[in-house]
Length: 403
Image 1 (tube, rainbow, N blue to C red):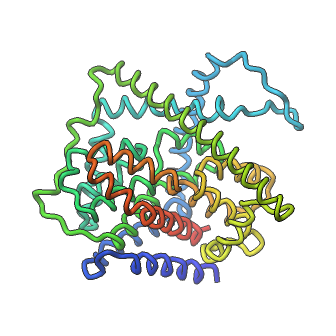
Image 2: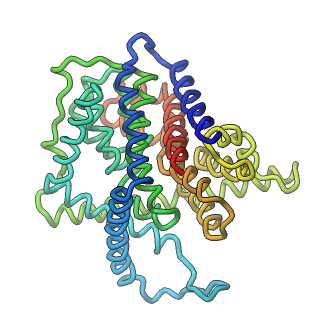
């Protein structure tokens, strides 16, 4: 029954995208079919094979080690901060110190790997391979892979030299990849809140989902002369140590931005809930969102007794951001309030930038590159969010088929 519901959810997601399509006659169904098969194969490999399990544990081990090293740097400057013991005697977690400041170290590593041309070269050739097997344009494929490692702004800036070639449909695809992904610099922070294996499987699934949905909504055909990837100017650093410094500063900015957004969103959520409770006692926005999204959660494979909790987390992520939702999910995982299947499906859904605030981030970035194209992104901003959210549903549903 669960598999049938999952397949129905996939059909519904693809059907909604088809109804939203700008050019149904030119949809590349072969590429879409290939990418769905790649999603299924990737998820099966990571969840249901010994080799996949070993690879996931190996990558998780690398991130665990990096998190440990990052905490050494944090403890050096904050080692004297007192921790209030929790009820079980463990020291309490200070989210900004224990989670967000780790972003600085991960951003530094990414900056150095970018300066050394290691990461851009890997991304370029993976993107070229993806383009070859799916028939999608190289720029869009490169951007999709690049979006796994870098944030929305950084991913789009990496292809700014190609912006003059981007039609409205191509602009939609690259923007959708940026919104449907996450930055590797904050993956370590996610792993402090939700299970590592679901974060890792979400990275490739979301890359494919963004391309699948965007290719249906905004199909493209690109001449070869307008489809060239240039990685010569991927780093502004003139030396190794400048790259380290730039990465640290960028990571610090990201940590502060996330902290500021969390203060604003969580406080606003409490304000909205207090207003709602003046009218309906005991009712919260999260509960309302839970009931609204419960049918979608049901199709995705969430057990019937956990639909409202799952829908609440999904809705919270869309109207605020993934950090707020993950902070709500984390204690549920610790308390055993949700089944493993629900945790897996919801975790994959949450691991993306698909939320309302991302519309402004992407539109602002594009505006800085090309003012006319920035106006275009603002025009299709809501359509972009719907497409990215459908991508999150597709990724989570496919993950649920193997849980």
